Structures are given as C-alpha cells and as structure tokens.
Image 1 (tube, rainbow, N blue to C red):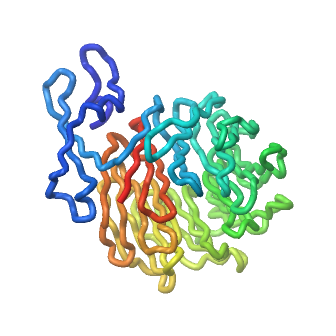
Image 2 (cartoon, one colour; image 1 turned 30 degrees about the horizontal axis):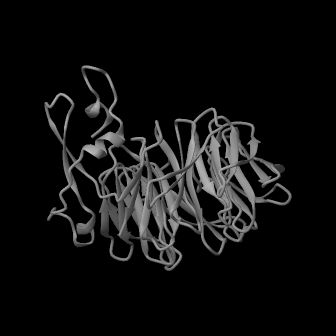
Length: 397
C-alpha cells in the first residue's frame, strides 16, 4: 500500500501511518509462512476511507516508532543497550527511542534540513546526526543534551565514529572529508583529494586509516594524523577500476582489503597493503551495486544491487557462490557478527539469508514504502528499520 492508496480522495487528507496500524485486526493463523516466520506473521484487512476497496496488510513487526513526519533516512542501534535506537529523517529531526516499548526518549532538534545520517559512538556515550544543512549535531545519549554543533563545507553524505575513541568523521558533497574531536568540537583535519562528492567512507576497523569513495570514480586511503593520501585508485587513471560513481564500500576486519560497489554494475576487491592491487572484479550484476560487505567468519563477500540480486562471492576462488533473488532492488546488506548469515532490505521487506546455501531463512513484512536503512543487534536476532513511509519498525526472531 503506497501513500496514494491511503489518500482520502474527498478531503485530500493523509492518513497517519500510526492510525493505520491501530485499525488493523491481526490473524496469526497464516499457514503460508515458513517455519521460522510462523510466530511473527500477521495479516489484517484495512478498508479504504471511501470503503471502495479492501487493502491487505501483512505486518511481522513487534513494535514501531511513529513520531517522524517525513521519510526516515537513517537508523542506528546503541552498541551496549540495544533497546535504545536513534533515527533521523526528512522532517529535519532525530529521535532517541526504545525498541522494546516504542517510547520516545528525546527529540534531537537543531537541524534546518533533512537528517540523512545518524550514528552512536563506539562506547554509546554520544550520538551524532548529519544533515543536508551541512551541520553535524552531537548529543549526549543519557541526557539528550546537545554537546556540540559542527559546521562543514557542504551537505553531509555520511558520518562514522572512530572504533576506539570519540573522534567523528564525515564526508561532504563538495569532495572533502572532515574529522573532529568530541566533545570539544575541535576540527582535527580536513581531507582534500576527491574531485566529486564523497559518497562513502569510514575508518578502517583497526582505526589507523580512513578509506573514502567518490562519484569521481576513485577511492583514497588516508593517514588520519597528517590528512595525507597514502593511496589513490581512480578509474580515470586505471581502466581496470570503476568507470562510474562509487556507491558503497566495506573494509574487512583485518583492515587490509576494501570492497567497492559502483553505478557501473561492478564490484572491485582491492588490497590496501600492496600499493592498491586490484585482486578481483565481480561483474554479475546488471544494475547499480548499492551495498557491499565482508563476512567475518568465512572467506565470503556479498554485493547487493538494484537488479534485485544479492550475490555471494568466494574470496578464495573469486567466483560467484550463491545468488539470492529479491522482489525489488537491494538497498543495504549487513553480515551478522561471526556468522555466515546476513540481512538485507529490499523495497518493503527485510530478508535473512544463509550465505552457504542461498536459503531465505526469514522474510519480514510491515512497511508500506521503501526501506531506506536498517540496524541489526549484535546477536542478529533483532532488526530496526527506517522507511519512506515515515515509520520505524522493530522485527525479532
């Protein structure tokens, strides 16, 4: 059900998503669900406002958060108390809330444009929100108090916290990467080297380097202490590399390999410790690769694309091992900690896959528009989602 289907034709009044959930009557006797879904699958019938048609709603969620008044773009889960969630959206606001009760803890206000990236610090003391207004606001989690407001040079594309300290990193639309010390807000370095928007980036897991990717078809490995470029690989200089925008990247837990995804439908595996040697090119997709990731427990990597396919790659042989078919384009994937399982979001659904067999172990429904982001608990049993339908939902095994 999209927004137009729940639009009152006579009064031109949008029905709040929260109200729709309250009107649903559930029936958990759905025999079509697989065994792992049986306890969580509910169906309801909603009549349209003019009673001209009945719309079926399948909702497997166990909780929801309904305070956002526009698309929810980003969501994250507290690293220690995993019932505490942060979400940010097109209503220029972030919220701290609880996934077990749906209770709002704090409204995180102060942005003047969409909040497109939210993230907890590694120890859970702080939470940051980056916006299209070029600002990053940092709050204390326990009190909800604003700690510092950080100004960059352009729209914030992504944010990342250092894995071992209160240092915040952000990529911007004008091609620069910024790094601040928290809570002082002191700017530690500005990294310049990309000729286009810095679409993706992160600290390496060991915290010693930074990797960023851009729509200028390049990735750069940075020294965070000196802001100097250690390594740059560009499709403009090397025809073996991407010939279009870098859309996604991941770094393995040993911090020596980076996997990239691109609008050119390919993914590249690069060794960061050998002068940027391109070890492999994964080219089975037919549309943009939106998300990539490494498995921590097996020599496997995954790529997700708008062609509706999740591909599992064997890093020992550089060959395609499994293809998992979705009903829509894949927006994001995350491997479970030290497990061959991974979770993906595709259009309005969440899927859990076994990479060894390609089996779809769980499918969760509930959203009425595209899922834009999700976060997963450390044990892999709980997922929280952010969607274009203005709602965050909680799913659990």
